[in-house]
Amino acid sequence: MRNLFSSQLHTEKTFYSSFLEDLDNCREEVIIESPYITGERASQFIPIFEKLLDKGVRIYVMTRDPKEHTLSMEDQSEEAIRTFEIMGVQTLLCVGNHHRKLAILDRKILWEGSLNILSQTHSREIMRRIDNEEFTMEMFNFLKLSEFI
Image (tube, rainbow, N blue to C red; front, side):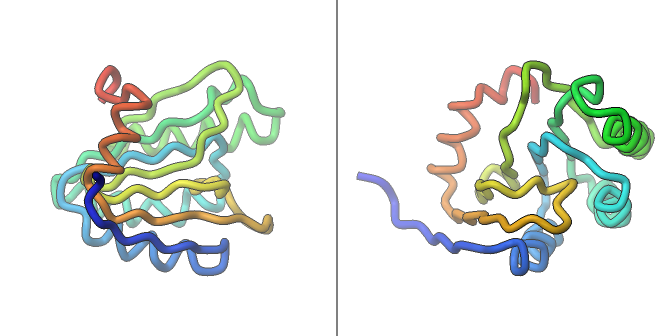
């Protein structure tokens, strides 16, 4: 029998305010899988990532290899990745049409759904926030993230 847990659904309109609040409460680790990274969205995350890094939080961004994007997306993604890495964000490039969208915060909170966290602008999306360490670790282990992180 699984532990009780809390779950909330979010749209693209409610996601970022809740997600940013969760990020502000992180103490150890942030893992974000976002296949796309745009310059505009990355610039919004830079000060947030700087604050987390200053607190000693480890940040991992897993994203599609920029070479798998169109030229304009490739340039934006490469620039953002370069900036993230200079800051101290560990960026892991995925090949083979990577398309997962999720975040794992302190291995206790799981965000999953259809929203590209580091690129979303105009599309209609959903994300589910699950506040349960068991479910979060189930996803962490299912994705074999310990091999990379």
